[in-house]
Length: 420
Image: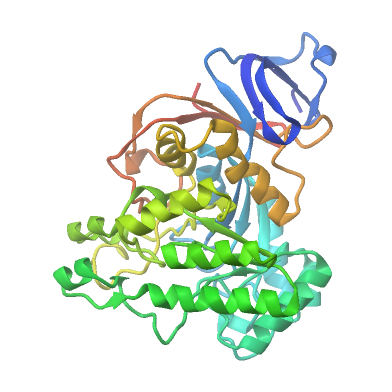
């Protein structure tokens, strides 16, 4: 493996308290002291660039196995690399679902050739149907890093409690898709826009009821829970209150909830349909406030690829949008350019804290640790779906001009994306 010396670069490494200009040396796949660099190292001029720990995305749908016409492990990780994501958590709603050791092993084996580190979520129930519990011990031995039925809520509360208790014993997170299935079912956020479109809406109460249940379980049994893709101001308020009471709850939101609102749906373009749906301006501002005050711990993408054919009809299309390649740029545009937080604070939300939630060796540039990092520049660029690197192109950021661009990604000491 070639060694790499990045010279004269602005380094932001929040976990180690670093925010200054310097050099970075990578040897044998790990961060190494710069004084060890020799003439064989590949030299990269870092002038005008910023280096940060590789991003950790807690919410990704790779569609592999079973739906590789949308995305697969290799193409998904190419999109990840182009977005500075070096570690990602792959959700279990594959076909078959990630409910057996065989499927877990398939994903981990294929991921060995990928451009990002892939961590696998094991299903809580067989085929995500909330009817029969999976063998969590078997899944853990096969290599899972978290538990969830994401794509669906766990309808059986007893099964959810058992999974939360077991995960706490194993030291892995449960990530919760919070939704009341009896209230859910609409295509867009319920309100003025759904009425104008003449489409059945999904009330915020569907998400809020699910959030309330998971918080109640975490409090009652004193076990951790991670709340996925928060999109409503009411759920944010519940999470804030739970944290004040000492409940072991963490949460994530996604860049599209920070930048976009339900008004995009007036275009009748299915690329703006996801679950939870885009909400109101009040919800959007609440997500920003919740990130600012620490109520929401992390930014994840809920990267959900679909084919153009599937997304062609506004009302019948499946929910979901891609996000890994634009996540940092979109979050930077809203939060850093918008003077909400510093670059270091943003990196904490997208790298350091997600790594801690997942319990992995990532989110910092400590000597001897795996060399995962991203180089970016504060430059404007316009999102062109056809120039993105994943298999699917269903991005809600198409045509938008963003304020930061990923220029180079290193994963495990290997350059996996280079736009210098």
